[in-house]
Length: 408
Ligand SMILES: *Cc1c(COP(=O)(O)O)cnc(C)c1O
Image 1 (cartoon, rainbow, N blue to C red):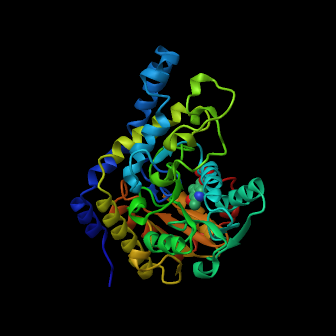
Image 2: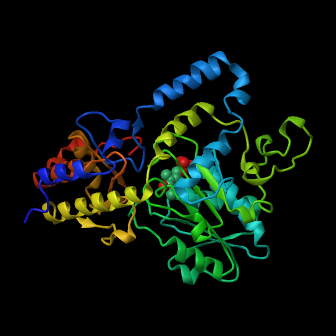
């Protein structure tokens, strides 16, 4: 039995409460874009907003814009707009720097809050930069040990200061139970730091309800902030007075224009600012956040579950030889679907040439991201049928599909 026809999918698109959102995006024709989990699509309004920042705020008003256009406060005002997407309160989120840098800042702030505990729990399955930065923090602060988890319960103990985990796994799309994990970490006396890179804009997140201590995430994936857009960090209000930012730059100073010789931290999350913000990048991010302010995350989640379930069902039927590595239970996955295939790299290249853009992660994972804001049910159908054709006719076997690219 056929899971769904293209006409069925078209009918689902007509009933989709988010269907008008696609109009907000500039998507090339003939492309089924399943990589919004890596670089989100371009909002149509971004170019005009950035042009305004360049021509008017910078070109006409020059340095006055630090005051008149709110440039100085961008890390906080942008952070407050991100807060509603991750269940944070006002004044708990600061936008800026990269996720990698923010991991360093929050980890270095968290560890001294648990004096006497010398272990950082990390996950070797996490996106490598998270683990790399943990190594850097351990070196910089000295005499910290890194313990990589197999099972979380085995890793926890009264020597653990902080735990850093991704909410959604970047390779498999598996979703952790944020409330339960945070509670276990707290029961062991440690602090919990969540990486939300593959969560924000894809699944509802409620950091406050989970009682999380710190979090980080990027905005260029599901949030469509643009390549290299400012990332963000979250510091729970209860930690803000005690948490010290070791990247203690002047933008986080209590009185930056006093130009005092020594550092004094600003109140609140602002102390986690370091240097001058990339204003043009914030402008692009805020164009996208204008759209996100109107979005109901429950609708995003419902559509994400429907799209990923449809894709899994179609691929089960059309490509029965592929091994699904993403959890089948929608409650246990984010908004991506991954398959194990040792020829995943040439398959991904062959798909791209036929307009279906996904990606490949070593050693053998093909990833397909489903950004609920702008993808349609017909896109899911088209992707599954093209995948079936590429595999069924072995179109991926052409030698040129094996040539390596710099960014995969
Ligand atoms: C995408 C991603 C990052 C990216 O880090 P950058 O510093 O922004 O390049 C980090 N961690 C995880 C889990 C990611 O998925």
